Amino acid sequence: MTTTQADIDREILAGQADGPQENQPRLDYPPYRSSILRHPTKALHPIDPEGVELWAPCFGHSDVDDAEADLTIQHAGEPQGSRIVVAGRVVDGAGRPVPHQLVEIWQANAAGRYAHLRDQHPAPLDPNFTGQGRALTDADGYYRFQTIQPGPYPWRNHLNAWRPAHIHFSLFGTDFTQRLITQMYFPGDPLFALDPIFQSVTDPKAREMLIAKYDHDLTSPEYALGYRWDIVLTGDHRTPLDTEEPS
Amino acid sequence: MSAAPGQTVGPFFHLGLPYEKGNELVPPGRAGAIRLHGRVLDGSGVPVPDAMIEIWQASPDGKILQQPGSLRRDGWTFTGFGRAATDADGHYWFSTLAPGPTEPGKPAFFAVAVFARGLLDRLFTRAYLPAPKDLDALLESVPEDRRGTLITEADDTGVVFDIHLQGPHETVFLSFPRHRGIWA
Ligand SMILES: [Fe+2]
Image (cartoon, rainbow over all chains, first blue to last red; front, side):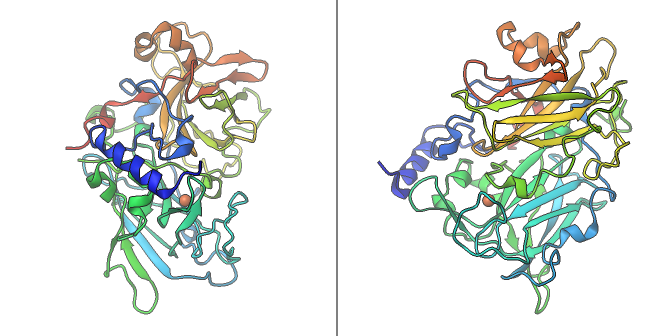
């Protein structure tokens, strides 16, 4: 039997009713079919971080060129689609900025196609768009990318499944336990309610945190629309005594 | 303060994350280089060809490094960070140095983060060097029948660390204090 969107909608609703609202994705979330054999069934083991876990890897200008934050200039010509700026601040669980840290993104092009061999969606590739970028946050935790508005795209979770438009984000904090990979979405996407990946976070306030806000102050005249997305990581675990230098 | 939820890396993370020599913390074959490798397996024991492993480790003398250069390896600087995608057989490998204990009397380990299509959020675990002489808080608190999932096994190139996302040999995955009660 083919699974339809209506089946998935029912499973999403059932998932919201059968437990507390959770602010992190459920690892065991059958509406996302690929998760069924890939989630741990035993409870995560609680432990205090030690040693390297209290520190994060360090990246610098030898790792990331400033130009990598502009996904629209990686080829000879201009990519197709609407130019956008995505900018914001990375802060930790205490609201402190995460300075000089790596932010990596990847995304589909304006037509909803990834420049990836395994993407078989019959939408055009754009020879002028790869869809990969990197940046370092500044001293106050701010990052800024210029890119192209990604398109929504179909996938094979169920019949007529479509992902809301998104940009994949990879982030580090000041300790390794803050490592985060997530997806940034755009305001008002009609596909939110239908998407089992987005809905795997059962708390609506937490889902809000993944949606960028349109920001006219980031918009530049006759050039690009601006979106603001601030990212809150979990808290770090270092005490003031060991924040200065690693052992 | 609340934290942003994670989301799966999906099937196309190769576009954004793995990079050249990401898995070569030191050039293979260099004096002291070991291979840390293994497979990522799902609940049916089937290899996961679209997973990504990150390691973060101390130097052989137990120092925690704050050294840039992981993304563009110069061949000489040991940064302690590496990233490897699994291949079609679910296999990953790193060329690295064996970490030292960061405190005397503590067993040495690699901090490990696991990502995959189908995995909605990253998982943390540790890969200890083979046959640890001393136990630490984690090894002591894990029931003996699961402790082995955290400990690498020696082979002729280095050490082996298989990661079972699910199933009878499910790896022990970790949750840290700040991951809990973050919705204030
Ligand atoms: Fe995607």
